[in-house]
Length: 357
Image (cartoon, rainbow, N blue to C red):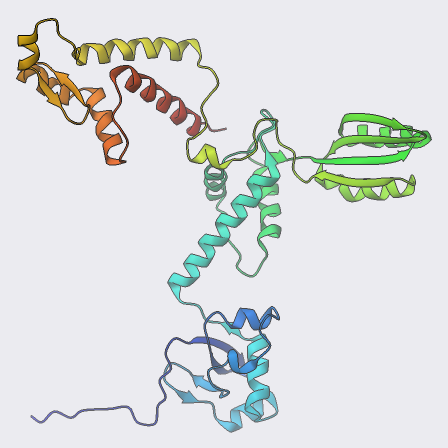
Protein backbone atom coordinates (compact mmCIF):
# COMPACT_ATOMS: atom_id res chain seq x y z
CA UNK A 1 0.00 0.00 0.00
CA UNK A 2 1.45 3.36 -0.99
CA UNK A 3 1.68 6.07 1.59
CA UNK A 4 0.33 9.48 0.71
CA UNK A 5 1.92 12.52 2.37
CA UNK A 6 -0.81 15.01 3.20
CA UNK A 7 0.31 18.60 3.61
CA UNK A 8 -1.86 21.65 4.41
CA UNK A 9 -2.32 23.99 1.47
CA UNK A 10 -3.32 27.63 1.67
CA UNK A 11 -3.16 27.86 5.47
CA UNK A 12 -1.20 30.40 7.49
CA UNK A 13 -0.16 29.02 10.86
CA UNK A 14 0.34 31.60 13.62
CA UNK A 15 2.35 30.87 16.75
CA UNK A 16 2.81 32.76 20.03
CA UNK A 17 -0.54 34.40 19.45
CA UNK A 18 -3.31 35.74 21.63
CA UNK A 19 -6.75 35.38 20.07
CA UNK A 20 -9.52 37.93 20.55
CA UNK A 21 -12.91 36.50 19.62
CA UNK A 22 -16.23 38.23 18.93
CA UNK A 23 -19.45 36.47 18.03
CA UNK A 24 -21.91 38.57 16.06
CA UNK A 25 -25.06 37.57 14.13
CA UNK A 26 -24.30 33.95 14.96
CA UNK A 27 -20.88 34.05 13.25
CA UNK A 28 -17.54 33.88 15.05
CA UNK A 29 -14.83 36.38 14.14
CA UNK A 30 -11.27 36.30 15.45
CA UNK A 31 -8.13 38.42 15.21
CA UNK A 32 -4.54 37.43 15.99
CA UNK A 33 -2.74 39.65 18.54
CA UNK A 34 0.54 39.65 20.37
CA UNK A 35 0.48 38.33 23.93
CA UNK A 36 0.25 40.90 26.75
CA UNK A 37 -0.61 43.65 24.25
CA UNK A 38 -4.40 43.44 24.26
CA UNK A 39 -4.72 44.59 27.88
CA UNK A 40 -2.20 47.37 27.24
CA UNK A 41 -4.31 48.57 24.31
CA UNK A 42 -7.53 48.50 26.30
CA UNK A 43 -5.96 50.37 29.22
CA UNK A 44 -4.62 53.04 26.88
CA UNK A 45 -0.93 52.28 27.43
CA UNK A 46 -0.33 51.03 23.87
CA UNK A 47 -1.34 53.38 21.06
CA UNK A 48 0.21 51.72 17.99
CA UNK A 49 -2.19 49.20 16.43
CA UNK A 50 0.65 47.44 14.58
CA UNK A 51 2.24 46.61 17.95
CA UNK A 52 -0.97 44.86 19.03
CA UNK A 53 -2.13 42.99 15.91
CA UNK A 54 -0.02 40.34 14.24
CA UNK A 55 -1.94 40.99 11.03
CA UNK A 56 -4.84 43.29 10.25
CA UNK A 57 -6.91 40.39 8.94
CA UNK A 58 -10.16 39.03 10.33
CA UNK A 59 -10.34 35.24 10.69
CA UNK A 60 -13.14 32.84 11.37
CA UNK A 61 -10.59 30.47 12.95
CA UNK A 62 -7.10 31.75 13.76
CA UNK A 63 -5.66 28.38 14.80
CA UNK A 64 -6.55 26.86 11.39
CA UNK A 65 -5.79 30.01 9.42
CA UNK A 66 -9.32 30.26 7.95
CA UNK A 67 -10.22 33.79 6.84
CA UNK A 68 -13.63 35.32 7.43
CA UNK A 69 -15.89 35.65 4.38
CA UNK A 70 -16.62 39.12 3.01
CA UNK A 71 -20.38 38.57 3.01
CA UNK A 72 -20.28 37.62 6.72
CA UNK A 73 -18.29 40.78 7.49
CA UNK A 74 -20.80 42.96 5.63
CA UNK A 75 -23.75 41.30 7.35
CA UNK A 76 -22.26 41.60 10.83
CA UNK A 77 -20.37 44.91 10.74
CA UNK A 78 -21.87 46.70 7.71
CA UNK A 79 -18.43 47.12 6.17
CA UNK A 80 -15.61 45.04 4.83
CA UNK A 81 -12.83 47.38 6.04
CA UNK A 82 -10.51 44.97 7.86
CA UNK A 83 -8.84 47.65 10.03
CA UNK A 84 -12.15 49.08 11.25
CA UNK A 85 -13.47 45.61 12.04
CA UNK A 86 -10.25 44.68 13.85
CA UNK A 87 -10.61 47.77 16.06
CA UNK A 88 -14.18 46.79 17.00
CA UNK A 89 -13.20 43.20 17.77
CA UNK A 90 -10.20 44.44 19.75
CA UNK A 91 -12.39 46.68 21.87
CA UNK A 92 -15.45 44.44 22.39
CA UNK A 93 -14.12 40.93 21.86
CA UNK A 94 -13.24 38.31 24.46
CA UNK A 95 -9.55 37.57 24.98
CA UNK A 96 -8.87 33.85 24.83
CA UNK A 97 -6.49 32.74 27.59
CA UNK A 98 -4.86 29.33 28.01
CA UNK A 99 -5.88 27.19 30.98
CA UNK A 100 -2.62 27.45 32.89
CA UNK A 101 -2.34 31.17 32.24
CA UNK A 102 -5.92 31.74 33.44
CA UNK A 103 -5.26 29.65 36.54
CA UNK A 104 -2.12 31.67 37.28
CA UNK A 105 -4.00 34.96 36.88
CA UNK A 106 -6.83 33.82 39.15
CA UNK A 107 -4.37 32.59 41.78
CA UNK A 108 -2.50 35.89 41.70
CA UNK A 109 -5.72 37.91 41.98
CA UNK A 110 -6.93 35.66 44.83
CA UNK A 111 -3.72 36.46 46.72
CA UNK A 112 -4.15 40.20 46.03
CA UNK A 113 -7.71 40.13 47.37
CA UNK A 114 -6.61 38.26 50.50
CA UNK A 115 -3.85 40.83 51.07
CA UNK A 116 -6.34 43.70 50.80
CA UNK A 117 -8.70 41.95 53.23
CA UNK A 118 -5.84 41.48 55.70
CA UNK A 119 -4.85 45.15 55.48
CA UNK A 120 -8.41 46.40 55.95
CA UNK A 121 -9.57 44.14 58.81
CA UNK A 122 -8.70 43.29 62.40
CA UNK A 123 -9.69 40.81 65.06
CA UNK A 124 -12.12 42.71 67.33
CA UNK A 125 -10.75 40.90 70.39
CA UNK A 126 -7.04 41.57 69.88
CA UNK A 127 -7.30 44.65 67.62
CA UNK A 128 -4.66 43.04 65.41
CA UNK A 129 -4.92 41.88 61.78
CA UNK A 130 -5.23 38.24 60.84
CA UNK A 131 -2.46 36.48 58.94
CA UNK A 132 -2.63 36.20 55.16
CA UNK A 133 -2.78 32.40 55.36
CA UNK A 134 -5.73 32.58 57.77
CA UNK A 135 -7.59 35.00 55.49
CA UNK A 136 -7.05 32.71 52.50
CA UNK A 137 -8.33 29.71 54.48
CA UNK A 138 -11.49 31.62 55.47
CA UNK A 139 -12.05 32.69 51.86
CA UNK A 140 -11.91 29.04 50.84
CA UNK A 141 -14.37 28.14 53.62
CA UNK A 142 -16.97 30.60 52.35
CA UNK A 143 -16.35 29.24 48.80
CA UNK A 144 -15.22 32.57 47.37
CA UNK A 145 -14.64 32.58 43.61
CA UNK A 146 -12.53 35.24 41.92
CA UNK A 147 -14.19 37.34 39.23
CA UNK A 148 -11.47 38.26 36.70
CA UNK A 149 -13.63 41.07 35.27
CA UNK A 150 -13.99 42.85 38.63
CA UNK A 151 -11.37 44.87 40.52
CA UNK A 152 -9.56 43.31 43.46
CA UNK A 153 -10.55 46.15 45.82
CA UNK A 154 -14.26 45.77 45.06
CA UNK A 155 -14.11 42.02 45.61
CA UNK A 156 -12.12 42.49 48.84
CA UNK A 157 -14.91 44.65 50.28
CA UNK A 158 -17.46 42.00 49.28
CA UNK A 159 -15.34 39.31 50.98
CA UNK A 160 -15.20 41.38 54.19
CA UNK A 161 -18.99 41.71 54.29
CA UNK A 162 -19.35 37.98 53.71
CA UNK A 163 -16.78 37.03 56.35
CA UNK A 164 -18.48 39.23 58.96
CA UNK A 165 -21.54 36.96 58.75
CA UNK A 166 -19.64 33.92 60.03
CA UNK A 167 -16.42 35.01 61.76
CA UNK A 168 -15.29 37.61 64.33
CA UNK A 169 -13.77 40.13 61.94
CA UNK A 170 -14.34 43.83 61.40
CA UNK A 171 -13.00 46.72 59.37
CA UNK A 172 -9.98 48.41 60.91
CA UNK A 173 -10.77 52.04 61.79
CA UNK A 174 -9.33 55.09 60.06
CA UNK A 175 -7.35 57.62 62.07
CA UNK A 176 -8.38 61.19 61.26
CA UNK A 177 -7.41 64.66 62.42
CA UNK A 178 -10.41 66.98 62.60
CA UNK A 179 -9.85 70.72 63.00
CA UNK A 180 -13.00 72.70 63.79
CA UNK A 181 -14.00 75.88 65.62
CA UNK A 182 -14.26 75.27 69.34
CA UNK A 183 -17.94 76.27 69.53
CA UNK A 184 -18.86 73.47 67.11
CA UNK A 185 -17.29 70.69 69.18
CA UNK A 186 -20.54 69.62 70.84
CA UNK A 187 -22.18 68.85 67.48
CA UNK A 188 -19.15 66.86 66.36
CA UNK A 189 -18.90 64.99 69.65
CA UNK A 190 -22.51 63.79 69.42
CA UNK A 191 -21.89 62.41 65.95
CA UNK A 192 -18.68 60.67 66.98
CA UNK A 193 -20.49 59.00 69.88
CA UNK A 194 -23.28 57.82 67.58
CA UNK A 195 -20.62 56.30 65.30
CA UNK A 196 -18.94 54.56 68.27
CA UNK A 197 -15.73 56.40 67.40
CA UNK A 198 -12.92 56.90 69.90
CA UNK A 199 -11.09 60.19 70.47
CA UNK A 200 -7.34 59.64 70.75
CA UNK A 201 -6.29 63.19 71.59
CA UNK A 202 -7.67 66.72 71.71
CA UNK A 203 -5.62 69.93 71.41
CA UNK A 204 -6.65 73.56 71.52
CA UNK A 205 -4.96 76.26 69.46
CA UNK A 206 -6.67 79.62 69.92
CA UNK A 207 -10.32 79.24 68.96
CA UNK A 208 -9.57 76.13 66.86
CA UNK A 209 -9.88 72.60 68.24
CA UNK A 210 -7.79 69.76 66.78
CA UNK A 211 -9.15 66.25 67.43
CA UNK A 212 -7.47 62.96 66.50
CA UNK A 213 -10.06 60.18 66.39
CA UNK A 214 -10.58 56.70 64.97
CA UNK A 215 -13.65 56.28 62.78
CA UNK A 216 -15.13 53.29 60.99
CA UNK A 217 -14.41 53.56 57.23
CA UNK A 218 -18.14 53.36 56.45
CA UNK A 219 -18.68 56.73 58.17
CA UNK A 220 -15.84 58.55 56.39
CA UNK A 221 -17.94 60.32 53.75
CA UNK A 222 -20.51 61.37 56.33
CA UNK A 223 -17.75 62.60 58.65
CA UNK A 224 -16.13 64.58 55.82
CA UNK A 225 -19.44 66.26 54.96
CA UNK A 226 -20.07 67.07 58.64
CA UNK A 227 -16.66 68.69 59.11
CA UNK A 228 -17.19 70.82 56.00
CA UNK A 229 -20.57 71.96 57.33
CA UNK A 230 -18.89 72.92 60.62
CA UNK A 231 -16.33 75.00 58.69
CA UNK A 232 -13.54 72.65 59.64
CA UNK A 233 -10.80 70.63 58.00
CA UNK A 234 -10.28 66.84 57.80
CA UNK A 235 -6.93 65.11 57.42
CA UNK A 236 -6.34 61.36 57.03
CA UNK A 237 -3.52 60.17 59.29
CA UNK A 238 -3.88 56.42 58.70
CA UNK A 239 -6.18 54.46 56.42
CA UNK A 240 -6.00 51.33 58.59
CA UNK A 241 -5.16 51.36 62.31
CA UNK A 242 -3.89 48.22 64.05
CA UNK A 243 -2.79 47.56 67.61
CA UNK A 244 0.55 49.00 68.66
CA UNK A 245 3.57 46.79 68.09
CA UNK A 246 2.12 45.01 65.07
CA UNK A 247 3.56 46.78 62.02
CA UNK A 248 3.96 43.94 59.53
CA UNK A 249 2.08 40.69 59.12
CA UNK A 250 4.72 38.90 57.03
CA UNK A 251 6.61 37.72 60.07
CA UNK A 252 3.62 35.72 61.29
CA UNK A 253 3.61 33.57 58.17
CA UNK A 254 7.38 33.13 58.27
CA UNK A 255 7.35 32.28 61.99
CA UNK A 256 9.82 35.01 62.84
CA UNK A 257 7.86 36.47 65.71
CA UNK A 258 8.90 35.28 69.17
CA UNK A 259 6.47 35.60 72.09
CA UNK A 260 7.83 37.94 74.80
CA UNK A 261 7.14 35.52 77.60
CA UNK A 262 6.10 31.91 78.07
CA UNK A 263 3.28 30.71 80.34
CA UNK A 264 3.84 28.39 83.26
CA UNK A 265 2.75 25.30 81.31
CA UNK A 266 5.35 26.07 78.68
CA UNK A 267 8.02 26.47 81.38
CA UNK A 268 7.16 23.01 82.77
CA UNK A 269 7.39 21.53 79.27
CA UNK A 270 10.81 23.13 78.87
CA UNK A 271 11.99 21.44 82.05
CA UNK A 272 10.64 18.06 80.94
CA UNK A 273 12.21 18.44 77.51
CA UNK A 274 15.53 19.35 79.11
CA UNK A 275 15.46 16.23 81.27
CA UNK A 276 14.63 14.04 78.26
CA UNK A 277 17.47 15.46 76.21
CA UNK A 278 19.88 15.08 79.10
CA UNK A 279 18.96 11.40 79.34
CA UNK A 280 19.44 10.95 75.59
CA UNK A 281 22.78 12.70 75.44
CA UNK A 282 26.14 12.02 77.02
CA UNK A 283 28.45 14.59 78.48
CA UNK A 284 31.23 15.63 76.11
CA UNK A 285 33.74 15.76 78.94
CA UNK A 286 35.21 12.80 80.74
CA UNK A 287 37.42 12.59 83.74
CA UNK A 288 39.09 9.39 82.49
CA UNK A 289 41.22 10.06 79.37
CA UNK A 290 41.06 6.37 78.42
CA UNK A 291 37.27 6.51 78.25
CA UNK A 292 37.50 9.69 76.19
CA UNK A 293 39.57 7.85 73.59
CA UNK A 294 36.87 5.20 73.28
CA UNK A 295 34.09 7.72 72.64
CA UNK A 296 32.67 8.20 69.16
CA UNK A 297 32.18 11.64 67.66
CA UNK A 298 28.95 12.72 65.96
CA UNK A 299 29.87 15.02 63.08
CA UNK A 300 26.30 16.32 62.82
CA UNK A 301 26.18 17.52 66.44
CA UNK A 302 29.97 18.20 66.71
CA UNK A 303 30.04 16.37 70.05
CA UNK A 304 31.55 13.23 71.55
CA UNK A 305 29.23 10.41 72.56
CA UNK A 306 29.88 7.12 74.34
CA UNK A 307 30.42 3.61 73.12
CA UNK A 308 28.71 1.91 70.18
CA UNK A 309 25.44 1.32 72.02
CA UNK A 310 25.24 4.92 73.22
CA UNK A 311 26.27 6.09 69.77
CA UNK A 312 23.28 4.29 68.26
CA UNK A 313 20.98 5.72 70.94
CA UNK A 314 22.29 9.19 70.18
CA UNK A 315 21.13 8.87 66.57
CA UNK A 316 17.56 8.33 67.85
CA UNK A 317 17.65 11.37 70.15
CA UNK A 318 15.74 14.61 69.55
CA UNK A 319 19.04 16.48 69.77
CA UNK A 320 20.53 14.62 66.79
CA UNK A 321 17.30 14.79 64.74
CA UNK A 322 17.01 18.53 65.32
CA UNK A 323 20.60 19.11 64.21
CA UNK A 324 19.96 16.98 61.12
CA UNK A 325 17.15 19.31 60.13
CA UNK A 326 19.42 22.30 60.70
CA UNK A 327 22.14 20.67 58.63
CA UNK A 328 19.81 20.35 55.63
CA UNK A 329 19.24 24.12 55.88
CA UNK A 330 23.01 24.68 56.12
CA UNK A 331 22.79 25.92 59.73
CA UNK A 332 25.42 25.25 62.42
CA UNK A 333 24.72 22.55 65.03
CA UNK A 334 23.38 23.37 68.50
CA UNK A 335 24.37 22.08 71.91
CA UNK A 336 21.87 20.07 73.97
CA UNK A 337 20.78 23.16 75.94
CA UNK A 338 20.47 25.31 72.82
CA UNK A 339 18.55 22.52 71.10
CA UNK A 340 16.09 22.34 73.98
CA UNK A 341 15.41 26.09 73.83
CA UNK A 342 15.14 26.11 70.04
CA UNK A 343 12.70 23.18 69.95
CA UNK A 344 10.46 24.76 72.55
CA UNK A 345 10.50 28.05 70.69
CA UNK A 346 9.44 26.19 67.54
CA UNK A 347 6.52 24.62 69.42
CA UNK A 348 5.39 28.06 70.58
CA UNK A 349 5.52 29.40 67.02
CA UNK A 350 3.55 26.41 65.76
CA UNK A 351 0.88 27.13 68.36
CA UNK A 352 0.74 30.71 67.13
CA UNK A 353 0.26 29.58 63.52
CA UNK A 354 -2.46 27.12 64.47
CA UNK A 355 -4.42 29.88 66.24
CA UNK A 356 -7.89 30.07 64.82
CA UNK A 357 -11.25 31.62 65.63
